[in-house]
Every structure is written in structure tokens, then in C-alpha cells.
Image 1: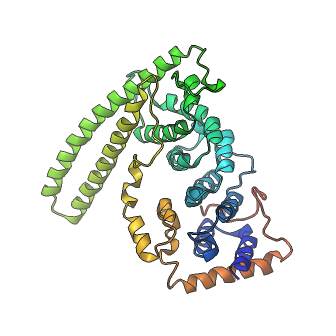
Image 2: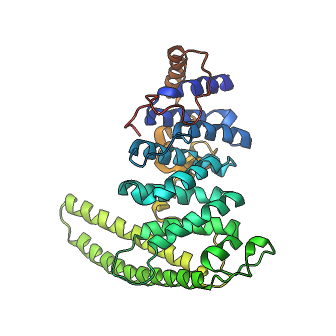
Length: 366
């Protein structure tokens, strides 16, 4: 029965809004066939559904903010399934081929979301994917890590995202950094390229790391001083509005300090000729601090599929999907059946990736 319902839902996804698609995915992950003991093939099936919604076969238009939003949302939805073994290759190939080369042209408000998604996906790459992605990541890193103190501002969260992605990718293929950053890592493979001189690259990369560290330490001092002032302001605040304003400033300052601490933790091991790359979960990305309680909450609800907590608010459409969610389940199944009658049963579930840019799937609702 669950397989039949899944097939029906697949067939009804040609004309859905972003919110509806997230509810469908939330419902599918509540089914036992996609539960905690489901094989990798089941996770791949879910990711393929998400890939279809992300239009990974479509020609990318940097001005199409709806497509960018869908891509980012779909990446976030897919993260728990990447963590459970589903391949990341199609998303990564699309990012590397279409998005990163035109990163400068993206709307400013989308750049950070995209870099966060890139950081989130980086731990789940294969060695081959990491080798393909690293040149693009290093190029972006050099763009946002100043070579020297020029007086221009540095976007600390951009650098945090890129350093995190760099570490996780380089951890899988450390010798790839020899020709990119001038390191001398010996693996015994031809790709070590030890006979070539990359000393200028190493000098440039090290200089940028030092500049980033200096700027980060200076900013940390200012943020620490600002926190002291915020604490004083909170004590002096009389109205709820004043307290709420100060609370927001304190939260922003705390996040800024976390970002700075993460940057310093990630730049420190990169100064050696043979650096160590962070490939574990010791670095807790600054924007994820607020979601730390979620795993325990998920455990309380059902104890299954803790990986879903990685998606933050994306999968919070139905927090109690395992219990008391019959109403939503019925609505979703009914919509799936309606989709069959609307679109015709002969189409099947094969509206694959990029199934037409004009398919009417709720433009502007992502």
C-alpha cells in the first residue's frame, strides 16, 4: 500500500507549490518504507524526486530567482537523505557547472543561502566529487579572503561557509590542494604533482589566511565590547520593545562571535606545509546553533530518522507526522489521487528533472 501511495504522489508533483511539495516529502518520509532501516536505494529514490523538482536539467538563468529559491530549498530538503547515503552528484554537478561560475551575478540575498547550502552538502561528497568541486571553492575563497588589509569589509559568514566546504572537500582528496594552495601533501599518486613549484600559490594563500585571522580577531574584540554594551542596555531597558530590540542585537552579536570562532578554528590548521583538514562534525556552523535542541525533540516524537533534524525549519511542516497526522496524510493522499485524475493515469511518475520550465508548479511560492 505504501508503495502504491508513493507512486501516486510521484505522479501528482507536476503542479505543486513549494509548500505543497515540502508537505508531500514530509509525508513520504513518514512512511515505513523510507524509515530508519530503509536501504540506500530508498534514499536515492527520495533524492531523485527532489532533483526533479529542482530542475537540474534546465538551463540556468541567473535572473530566475524562483529557480534559485527552488534549488536551495530542494538542497535543504535532500540533506537528510544525503546523510543516509543518497548520491549528491547531480546537485553538485549543477552547482559546479551552472551556479558557481556566475556567483557574482546572483542576487545578493541569494548568495548567502547558496553558500550555506554548499557548506551543508560538502560532508556528503565522494572523493571524485570533492576533486571536481575544490578548484571552484578555492577560487571563491580567494575572492572573499582579502590578500592584504585593503580597508574593504570582509563577509565573515561567506568565509565561514567556504572554509567549511574547503575543509570537508580537502579532507577527502588532500593532495588536490597541492596545485590549488601550494601545499606539499604526499600520497604517492601522480596527482600529488610534487615536482612542480607552487610556492607562490602557497605564499598567496597563507597571506590571505593571515589577513582573515587579523580581521577576525579585530572584529571579535569589537563584538565582545558590543556585547558588554548590550548587557548594560538590557539592564536599562524599560519597555518590552526596548528589551526585544536589545535581545535581537545580543543574538546577532552571539552569532557573529560564533562565526569568528569557527573561522579561527578552520584557518589555524591550514598554515602548515602539510595541513590537517577537518572532516568531522567538530565545527558547528554558526547559523545552526539555534537548532541544536532539535535532535532530542525528534527522539521524543518517535526516535526515528534523526537525520531530518538537519534541515532546520524546512521539514517542520508536520513535526508530529508519526502521530495524530491522519488529517494531513489523508489530504496528501487525496491530492495525489486528484493529481492522477487531473493529469491522467498514463503519465506515470516520470516527470523527471527539468520537465519543462512552464509546467505551472507554483511560480513565486518557493
